[in-house]
Image 1: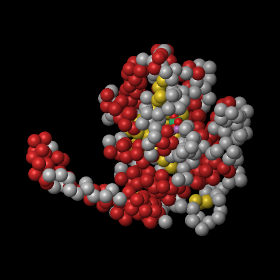
Image 2 (image 1 turned 60 degrees about the vertical axis):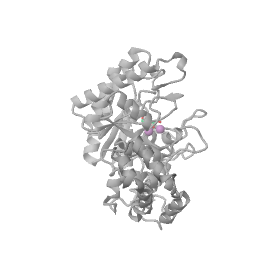
Image 3 (image 1 turned 30 degrees about the horizontal axis):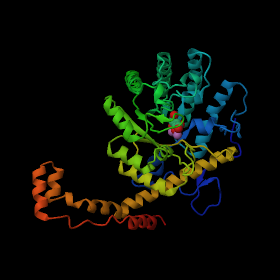
Length: 436
Ligand code: XLS
Ligand code: NI
Ligand code: NI
């Protein structure tokens, strides 16, 4: 059975092509910065947006049906799995990511739910074997069910904590069975609505306990992938504990989890935290915790996670600059945590959206490679800090300068006489010159 029968395999046709169902900039086997574009970009499909989301919002019902020709919930789930592999094949996407509840609907008991997961995991496993597609990461949806209304790991009710642990145990098992390269924690309800009813210290201690248990259990059953935390400042909670990369780093260090977790950085979450996407990537890279990316973009006029397909090439270029500077992806990749707009409601729109996102990142990679090869930006930054390479600057860096010595130094020079320009406008124009 073919689910997207009117769409063939998407091929690279180059910039001059006017075929909407072709890549203009993503040429999978072309070498850019020492590796094929396929290896550099490691695109992944998000199961939840792509296979499940029907376009519902706070004000309206779905605009696109995703039952894949079936009526029964488990039949839909099975067809969805087959359709997912057809879609990845046609878009030439090598990886996918899922929440447990995306692949199989929850039943009345955990036992029955887990049995359903096993049925679908069988399908995913055999489809992966025959297609060569891989699991970038798995995760547990610990935010959708009403039991999680006060949180999961951070719930005030120990039974809820227990349920979350049981659910995550199974999610880790299927991720391991499918050879997943990663396991993600995104704490959508791990936060609070008001401090008037919240013991924040206990909630955060408990979150750390749940993470420690997960890591220990996963390693004990042979999980070899990376663990990620995906920061987000708010939505659905008013305040989410994993606010941004810096906040998560402090949390991990406090609880001794910093060797076990890296970041999964999402562009739209960065902007919700009042940071640029590049800022979050830079903080992760500088602290050795750059892991994976949820590729999307937000809308500057809206204060929520719009999860749009990324098409802003300035952002993808600066993102790929950070990725290349971090040495490229290891176990991580670019997961399109993105959905078509509610009004883009045909299956073809999903293909067009992925093509737009993949082309935007292909352009970003090409430009980032040129920025690095051009060298002007890196050279400018190096020269800007040159005063630390010798003299008093070198002593500050190697830790031998004392307060008294610095005072004597200043008394001798009188005042700061040279402060070179930061040249922001020039540098922005260098980027434009490279891009166009
Ligand atoms: C929601 C998050 C979510 C995670 C996975 O805002 O981006 O989709 O990526 O739970
Ligand atoms: Ni995400
Ligand atoms: Ni998100």
